[in-house]
Image 1 (tube, rainbow, N blue to C red):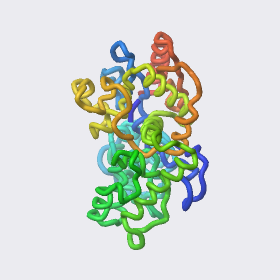
Image 2: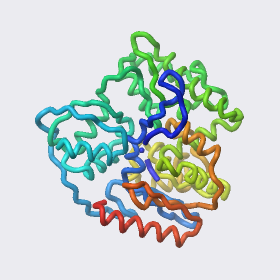
Image 3: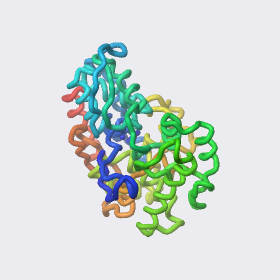
Length: 369
């Protein structure tokens, strides 16, 4: 699966734990609003995601109505909480974009789409899907504080802080000294995954960049302590949870966590395109076969066994808990067979896995993917 929901984690208000409502559904683009199909690669049967009109490595003709250009008359729209299709459907209803399908593809193709937040926006009528996604990714919304969406990377958080008004030099200087932010030794100096997703009641004119980032690390530490996670297990837990965050439909977090554990236990490559995409800093469909098979690259998850060197984004508390409480099961593969309902099927039988792929293909063909 590559790599994009309401927060099922328990939490308090904005000043306490993470928000109950998940900000992250809007970025499932990289995972759920695209083709979540698994492939077996080589003898180990590693799986991968198929995105942006690619089906099993083949570009498929996907016709979806789309406008051209950056639009015309201005219109105010309420961008909903949800995944790429949810947002696209609302924009299509308002005639901002021509179709939800075109929006989903543009959403998946834009790496900045993962940071899109809900809220009231000024858009334009009859925009191309790509220009609509690009405008939404600027996140020009009124904020009561700084909102870090689940799954956000350090680079995205850095950019968000700068765009919100913190001086770029201050943000970069703070990020360059992780220890001063309270990052524990077990994190190995890597902030990725340790900056907790939440809405923080902070503003550039009253809180320094370093103090904001300290709050993010402190919230992660607080949650790990509340969950009684031993220090020597925390870094691996954060990494696994970040994979679940990018891969799993909400209701299947635990099962996806179990698949990851089963593959690690079997000494099999994880084969998650979300890992490769994070490492290469580009969508999975732009990664070449040679790059996927490059054993010298630590994020080449199809050929490098074990966990990636770092997390690939900020996990929600729900994903952390899913790793800690993963249900027992023999599963090694999974396929999201319906992108509208997010129905996902799991198996440890390769032939059944192939049947699930066929089931997805039928659904995709019937629904214009």
